[in-house]
Structures are given as C-alpha cells and as structure tokens.
Length: 125
Image (cartoon, rainbow, N blue to C red; front, side, top):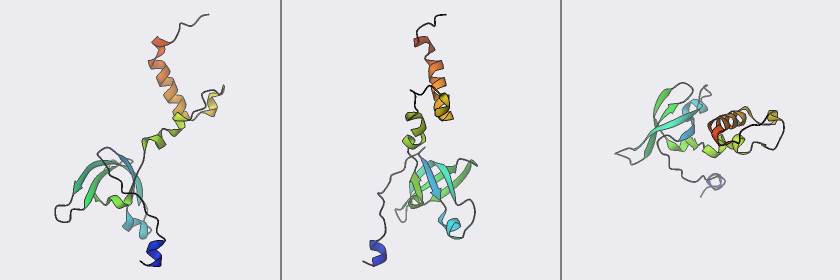
C-alpha cells in the first residue's frame, strides 16, 4: 500500500434514505474553482445503477429548489437532525435573559408554550 493511501482518513459508509438532509459537493466544480460547488440538499431518491451496481442519489438543492440527479454519495455528508436542533436542545432555559438563547430556541419555546397553554395553571393577578 502506498504511503499516500495509508495517510488517508477513512470514513464509515453511510446509507442515505429519502428525505435525508445532506451537504453535497460537486467535485468537478470544486476542483475547477467554480462557485456554487457545495450546497445543502434533500435526498429525493436513492437508486442503484443496473449495469455497475453503484448507488446514486437524486437531490433537491434547498436554496434554489433545483433537481440534481445522479449524485455520487461519496461527495455527500449526512446533516443529522441533532446538529440542526443543537441550539434548541442546549438553550439556557434557566437564564433570566431570553437574549442568551438563540432566536430559534426562543421561537420553539414560544410555539411550544402557546400549544400547551391549556396545561399551564391559570395566572393570578
């Protein structure tokens, strides 16, 4: 095995499913230095090429609502929901100042409280 291959980091094989959110990098555009080479997308379809057996994905680029077909999953990374929700999950609810929370955490908390208002004790004047 060559020295170059030994130093390479290996990543675990990820299985993608419909509606997963991913970060995709168009390798050709990236290596040519062209703009728009990396974007967030949603997996629309996962399929296997009949001749080669290789797996490909069809994506929808979220910012432009553009279909991108035949994407090689080697150039995709899963965007876990835990990462997207981290600011809400770690919101400092004990802080008296709501400014210490991110806007997303405040919005989620307000929506949650509005939905569960019937479960709260009646306010006294």
